[in-house]
Picture 1 (cartoon, helix red, strand yellow):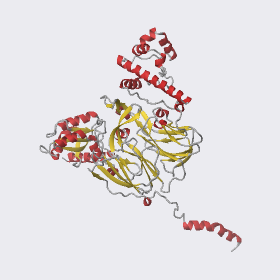
Picture 2 (cartoon, chains in turn purple, yellow):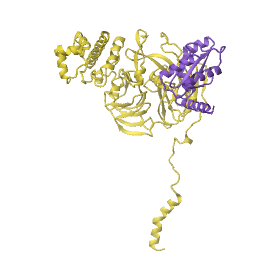
Picture 3 (tube, helix red, strand yellow):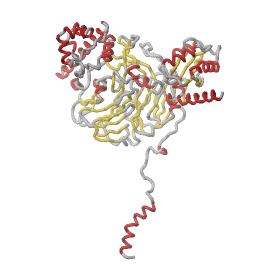
Picture 4 (cartoon, each protein chain N blue to C red):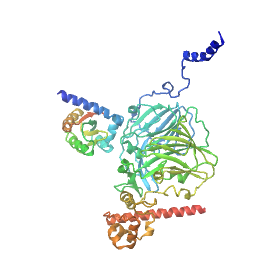
Amino acid sequence: MWLKVSFALVIAVLSISAWACGHCEEDLVAAVYDHALLMRTRQLKQNIMYMAWDGPVTRDAGTGRKLALLAAGVPGVPPGSVRVSVEPAAISIAFDPVKTNRAKIEFFLQEKFSKMNVMVLPLPERR
Amino acid sequence: MNFNRLSRVLVFSPLLLTVACGPGPKVAHDPYAPSQIELKSPPAQVSTVRHTGPFAAGNSLSYSAELKPLDPAPIKHVQLDTTHKVIEIAPGVHFSAWTFGDQVPGPAIRARVGDKIQFSMTNRSDETMPNMAMVVAPMMHSMDFHAAMVSPQDKYRSIAPGQTIEFEFTLNYPGIFMYHCGTPMILEHIASGMYGAVIVEPKEGYPTHVDHEYLVIQSEFYAKPDPAGKKAGSAPLYVLDSDRLKSSQPTHTVFNGLHNGMVKKPLPAKPGERVRLFVLNVGPSKTSSFHVVGTIFDRVWLEGNPDNQMRGMQTVLLGSSNSAIVEMLIPQAGSYIMVDHHFANASQGAIGLISTLDQPKAVDLEHHNMEASSAPSDPFVAEGKVAFETKCLACHSIGQGKKLGPDLAGVTQRRTDPWLTQWLAEPEKMLLTDASAKAMLKEYNNIPMPNQGLSKKEIAQYLAYFHWIDAMAKDTKNQSAVKAKGH
C-alpha cells in the first residue's frame, strides 16, 4: 500500500516538474489541441478533458500509440477522440457528460495506464 | 619634531587616512540595479473577446526594414494577432506560414528603456484568408518576448483560436530582442514564421548620429512541396519539412523573410553617409556570420546595447536569437553586399544590398549567391531536386566545383538526354562500352559511379532538375549581361 502511495507521489512530482519546459498547462493542452475535434465535440455537446501523463517509459511514437489505444477503451469515450503527445507528455479525451464524467475517466485511465507504469494528472477544466 | 619624524608623518598620513576611511562606497551608477528597474506587472488576462479588423496595430510598429523613428509615448499599445497565411518566400515558393501581425517577420516594435508595453493578441488562426481555403488547422499560439522580465507561466501561456491574451511589462534593458511563439513544438512555430524584433533604445538615446536605420532579421525556412499536392492559387503549395527541420537542413536562409529580398529592393544610402543596422538572427537553428562587403563596422553593440561596444569589426557572429547593432560608413558610390559569411547560408538567400544606386547591377552578386529561386516551383522538378540532394550531394556539387564526381552545373549542355538517361540507369555497363564514361572514370581516380537503382520516373525527374538548373544559370547570365550594358 505505502509503496503504491510513494510511487504515486513520485509520479505526481515528476509530472509537475515536466510542465516546466512547456512553460505551463496551456502548453500541454496546445500539444494535443485539435481544433476540428473541438468544434465537433461542441456541436455534439461533448467535453474534452486534458491531462498530463508521466512514467518510466520510452518517449516515442510507439508509446504514444499504445497509450492512445488504451485510452480509446475507456467507457464513454467517442471513437477517434483521443489525442496523445509524447513530448510534452499530454493526452486529451473527448467524452459525453451524459454517459460519464471527469472523475470516472481519470479512474479508468489510471487503471489502464498502470499496466505501463504510466499515471495521468488531469489539468484544470477548460471552458 | 625633528625632520625625519616630520617626513615620516607626511609620507604615511595619506596612507593612514585611506586605511581609516576604507575604500568607500562605489560611486558608479548601475542602471540595471534591481532598484533601478521595474519588475512588477499585473497578471495576464485571457478572454474570448476577439480583435477584428487589422491584424496589427500600434504607433511603435514598423512593417519593413525601414524603421520608423521612436514614438515618444511612454506607454506603447501593441496589438499583434496570430494568423495562418500563405507567403511567397522565394519566386514560386508559396509557403504555408504562421504569423504575428499577418506578416513574416512580424512587425518590429520600437521603444526605449523605461517604456511600458501594453500587449494584446488574439489567436486568429481560425480565420480563413480571402480567396484561400484553410491550409493548416487552427492551433494554439503564444507570445514570448525576450525583452520582458516576467513570469513565463503567466504571460507566455498558449491561447486557443478565438481567445485574446493581454499583459504588460516594462523595458529594462536596451537591445534588440526577439519575440516568438513559445507554444510546443516551438521549433515548428518559429520555423513557420512566428517571430519578430523589439528594439529598445537606451533611455538617453544612442551615442552616435546616423543617416539611416534599417532592420535585418535573418531566419531559415524548411520547405517542401505539399505531399497532398495542395495549391496556393495555381502554384504548388509548400509546407514545413519536419525532417529537414529536425536535422537543421534549411531550404532557404533569408533576410526579412524573403530569398534575396533586399537585392531586388536595396536599402538606400549615399556616399559618406552613416548607416545603423539592427541585426537579429532568429534562427531557429543556424548561426549568422553577418558581414557587409566593402566596408567595416565602425561600431558594434552586441545585443544592441551600447554598453557592449566593439570597434572596427568585419563580421559579427550571432547565435540563434542573438542580435547586434552595427554602424558603418558608406565610403563611396556602390552596392554594399550584406551576407551571412557562412556562404552556405548566403547561397540559400541570406543576401541583401545597401546601395547608392537606384538599380544595382545584377553582376554584383554573381560570386555570392545563386540567382533567383533555389527551389523549383514545378513539383516534378522539385522531386528531382530533393532526390538529388538526398542521394548525390556526397559526390557531386552544382556550381561549387569537383568533388568525388564532376560538378553537374551545365551537364545538360555537355551531355545529351539519352546519354544521361543511360548513365543514370546503367553506369556499370556504360563504363565498359562508352569512351567518355571510361575517360571520366580515369579523371576521377577510378571511383565508379554507383548504380542507384533509379526508376524511369526518377531518372526523368533528375533530368528535369538538371535542365532547370541550367536554364536558371542561362537566365542569370542573360540578365547580368543586359543590366551591365544598361539595357
